[in-house]
Image (cartoon, rainbow, N blue to C red; front, side, top):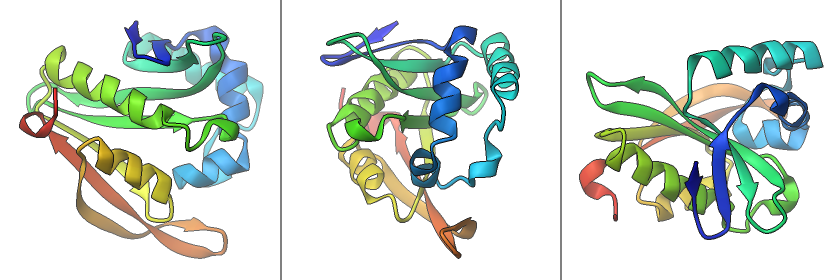
Length: 176
């Protein structure tokens, strides 16, 4: 378990399916992620099956829990861990819109960045963020991530094609 000043990250469990289902099927959350609503589980059973697969294959999938009150507010992961090239993909999702803009994304990003570099010995951490999610771009930039490039028109969002940015941080760029 990873712990910061206001949140702790605990491994996602099969019993978290109802939370994940709610977040994945909230159009506001899916929109901020740059995902089409239909990419996520359309039934609770599909969510349970997907979560069981995640639990069975990876321990780097975390539920974000507020320390004050113990309430889950989102999830985060280190995925596509490539030990040969020492790289991994970071995902941070604050699933409770009421908590957007409160600094939780930055805290979780810092926790997982430090964990990736100092425990997993990762050299490069990368992510993808929709170009219209300025809140997330500011968060990742504040945590030291740099824009590497743009995936032009890589997803359809609210009636038009939109782009995503690829961002990354290298171990030597991370403030420890």
